[in-house]
Image (cartoon, rainbow, N blue to C red; front, side):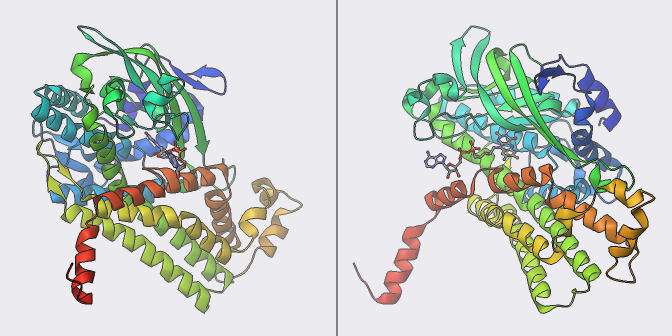
Length: 475
Ligand SMILES: Cc1cc2nc3c(=O)[nH]c(=O)nc-3n(C[C@H](O)[C@H](O)[C@H](O)COP(=O)(O)OP(=O)(O)OC[C@H]3O[C@@H](n4cnc5c(N)ncnc54)[C@H](O)[C@@H]3O)c2cc1C
């Protein structure tokens, strides 16, 4: 397995195709430093005695020890371990652990490439297994490029005025295919080494050109990564572990990119578009059942601490609000456990979580993210929004006064009270807080998509039959 240092050296060798704020920047540009710290957590976890049993797993390809982020799930226990690993790693990074994007895409293309081969006599799964070996041997970081830019939402891919608004195959050659289009919101974009592309939605028979899945090195000719970054605010005086993280993503543009056949996992099999899109969503919503409880844990911890510091830790409305956070965290986690335990082995040997439960968990999480921040805001009061700048706390003229007037709970030092309010401000009032909130709503699919997913996979007829039986209706 690579170290975080080796990973950093390796991404520095990639061809420069990363753009930020109108400039081409290298992958070692300091702007990415805090985001890279999140990825570093996943490498460092291998040597952490608490995390190692969850993070290190035997390769299904050759039995060597690998990082679980590069593994395909081979049992119910693997699904459970991925979920727990995700929750614990997010406690360290303060929010999204990001590397799961590649893991979830890897599992989805692994399952569906095998199913396409079974139905169509193709050899996509062989391609997948060669890619999986390469991915594991080099301990790579993958990016899931699913979400197309999509143009007019009311129109299908083949009905768009510009056919490139969903990524498509524009040429087929003897040695590979050429693709054009753009994928949006790709977390890890500027520092992923492989981009795993898969369809975003169900496709119709006119839409074979859009039924495409592949993996390609992130610096391949024709790929442009137009990136955005948000980081926890800089600290000058009060350094804190939670302030060292960030999140970056890319609009990933494929400007006629050549993909060799050996890297293609689907090409033209439109009937499998829905299966591939929904299976990635299933894996990712299952991952959310690990990361989202971690975010609730952090919001809950901050709420409980600030209540104690404010002297209202035992107030009935605060106890009630914190109980609600406990229920939300564990309900979402429980949905993930249920999805794991009821998970099934696919034809490829890769396990998939039970769809209804991963979607129900992700839905509850998405619908409650702003409510959870609201609870924190209610209990914290207005100070996280108006806290004076850090320098004022250390200036000769105002520093002592600010430390005097922040005092609430006499058993907690002024510095610790300042630390807590500053961190709550960073976690709930900053630019990155807004991104985390949007990620909570839309990451893995907007809540409406989970509702549609559940509805179309649910046995409603069974419930009608139960009701009819109880009501004595015979017809
Ligand atoms: C922080 C963050 C990180 C992400 N990371 C990744 C990533 O790494 N890889 C990746 O592939 N994706 C990623 N996503 C994308 C995420 O899956 C999408 O944001 C989500 O699926 C919604 O798609 P959209 O943003 O295009 O919004 P839209 O599709 O525009 O949806 C907005 C709303 O429009 C409505 N809507 C859309 N289409 C229709 C329709 N046909 N009929 C009626 N109503 C409709 C829905 O109600 C939806 O709530 C990320 C998103 C965020 C916010």
